[in-house]
Image 1 (cartoon, rainbow, N blue to C red):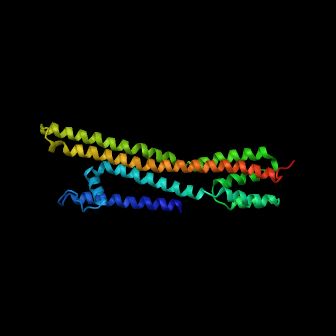
Image 2 (tube, rainbow, N blue to C red):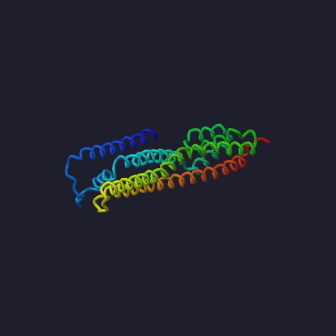
Image 3 (cartoon, helix red, strand yellow):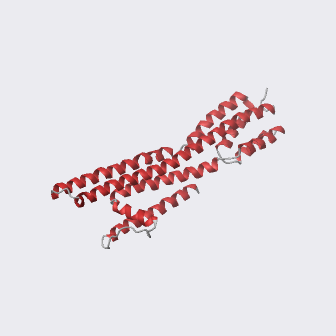
Amino acid sequence: MRRLLALLLVVGLAVFSANVVYAQSSGDSTEQTEASSEDSGYQILKKQFIDGDWRFMSFVLVCLILGLAFCIERIITLNIATVNTDKLLSRIDENLKSGDVEGAMEVCKSTPGPTASILYEGLKNADQGPEAVEKAIVSYGSVQMGLLERGLVWISLFIAIAPMLGFMGTVIGMIQAFDRIEAVGDLSPSVVAGGIKVALLTTVFGLIVAIILQIFYNYIVNKIDGIVNRMEDASIALVDIMASNNVFKK
């Protein structure tokens, strides 16, 4: 389901990109006008995208599409992974008070998320003593940490590469502007305006994409930190619950 939603996002943004490219190709044969106050934000954005030269802007748009797809997938995954640890520990405690370790394990198995998985690993090693439980929790916790952080490296890549693509468009636009100056032999604004406009717009869009993805990235990292803190607290509480209910064999 998570991958399906991320895929739908990619398809939707890809359709938007196709519409922009089509508008650019068909716009060559129509009269170009300044955006009026009646224009919608979408129309203004589309016009600026076209004016920035879609050949450069499309790469920035691809970074936005893929970056948002990874962000949405991570957000959905982390929201599913978030559980009420107090309620989970309370249900485990109820089973352990009656000596039903298997029942406590079933509670963990039926609860989604990394916290329940770690507690399950701890309960599975209950007959080997508290040291074995703590070791199992730490070992499996490292695995769950890797799963939580999966995909972050790609989001970081798109955050870094989007401004670079924008700056590349800036450099190419400035080169085009100087080529026109050299060809015409005149430094009039009309000669260099096109190249400079491409240069500025690609930079702006690259920075906007990086800012958007950075906000999502920070939210995801904060979400992961919260889950990890709850995992650690729940792990400590589980050992205490098991000790108080005499689960560990002498």
